[in-house]
Image (tube, one colour):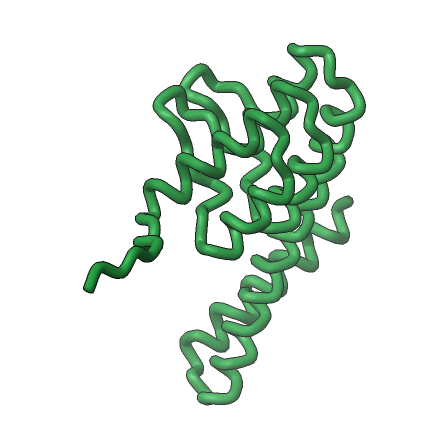
Length: 151
């Protein structure tokens, strides 16, 4: 008995197809690949991500898809260019502005996450009654207050 079936794709195949979908603006195909596990931050041989490819061609919708699925907006090619740099270089000004705003938002979210993680460490130390960590946490809080007061 000869049964034909689609063999599951490897991670590398999914990632290559995702970059290909980005090159041609195939948003629906990209969605399917992401759902199957394609990595939105994978890079090709030139160090370009799918977001770089979309930025080069000015494909805003697929770029939004990558951003909402966790694309690193600040990833750089082997030549040191971000997706925003690529979009500007190829005259895709609206997409470049979108990427600039998304980058600023991503940075702000990362800072907030870091602050929350810091507060959690202090909270956990207080719950454990760990005097050394508590003292460190209180010292760090004091430093933060001084820095904020100087602003």
